[in-house]
Image 1 (cartoon, one colour):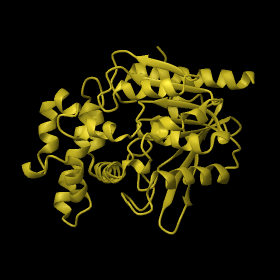
Image 2 (cartoon, helix red, strand yellow; image 1 turned 135 degrees about the vertical axis):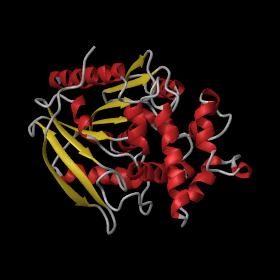
Image 3 (cartoon, one colour; image 1 turned 90 degrees about the vertical axis):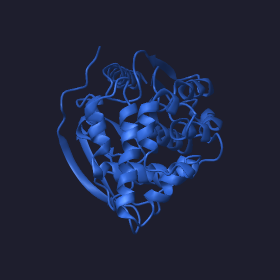
Image 4 (cartoon, helix red, strand yellow; image 1 turned 45 degrees about the vertical axis):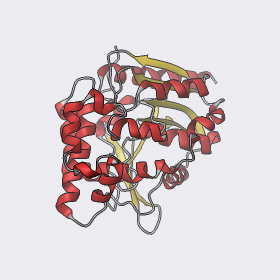
Length: 320
C-alpha cells in the first residue's frame, strides 16, 4: 500500500483578486517545470491543508492549491455573495491563465469532484487528466440522502442524526436544509454558530468508516464550521446551480480525457451509486472501488489509491 509523499514545502503563495469582493489564496509547490496539477478541496466551504500537497510526486508535478471563494485563507470568509459553481469554474480559468498554464491535471474529492467535473465539461481542452475521489453529483436525491430524515444517512447514523437535528424545532424538521439555511444566513449570531457546528459535526462524524477524532475536530473548528455550513447550505439549497442531472448528461464531453474514479465502498456521505453512475456515463475512465473505506481522503487505502493514480497518470502522459 502506497503512503502519501513526505511533507512538501510551499514554494510560494499569492492572492488573486477575482472580482470586486473576492480574493483567492493560491499556492505552488513541487517542481516549477513539472506537470501542472490543481487540487480542488471539498465542501464547498472547506479549504486546503498542507498535507493535500502530498498526493503528488514533488519531483514531477507542479502542484497548485487554492482556497475557493469564502474558504480557508481566501477573503471574505464564508461569503455567499458572487459564490456559485460557475464563479468557481471561471476562477479556475483565471488561475490557469495567471500561472501561464496551457493545460493541467485536475484532482478533486467530494465537492472537489463535482467542481472538477463541472470545469472539465466546460473546458475539456484545458484538462490533461482527471483524478476524482468520493464522487458527488449534487442531484437533489444526493443532497436529500445526507441532509433529510429517512432518506438514507439518518437511518445509518440515528445517534449522530439526533445531534444534527437538535438545533431545528420539530415543526421544521420536514425540510432540514431550508431550516438550516435560514439559521445560517440569519442575523442571530449565536443561532448561526450553533447551527454551523451541528451541521459540520454531522459531516465530520460520518466521513470515515470509523469516526475519527481528528476529522471531527477539523470540521467543528468554529472558523471552518462556519464556512462549511454556510456555503454548503447555500449551494445545496440551489442544487449547486446545476440543471437537473447536468454532470451525467454532459459526461460525454470527458470521453477523450484520461480519467480515474476512486470511491470508498462504504461512503455514507456520497454513496457508491453516484460513482457507479459516473462510471456508466464515462466508461473510458478507470474505476476503482476501495473496500473497507468510507468517504474521507484521510482513509489510508483511499490515500494509497490516489497516490497510485497520480503516479500512473504521469506515466501515461509521458508516453504521449
